[in-house]
Image (cartoon, rainbow, N blue to C red):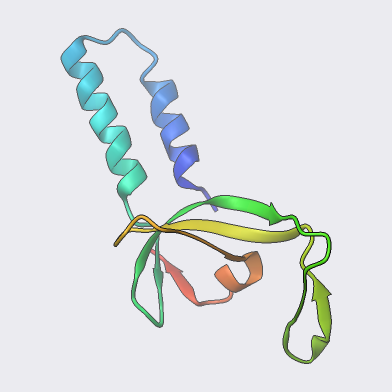
Length: 106
């Protein structure tokens, strides 16, 4: 899954040519539009989000329960990091939950 930062990096590489001030401003506006463009929609709430990337949760003692699987250690669990378009708040959830159909790619 390509994230927004990969898209921005591609634009930045393409933009490494000579800039006038006005073309530099236009280029920066284009980059900002990419950063603000929703990438996913939550199926239940219909909220739109911008996927930022994957990370790892670090917590030595945090243990949680997932269904009938019993307890599961959260330390080094892969998580998806995303930003709400509505208010800019940051969200984190386990990667498998982000990819299980709760979100649709736009």
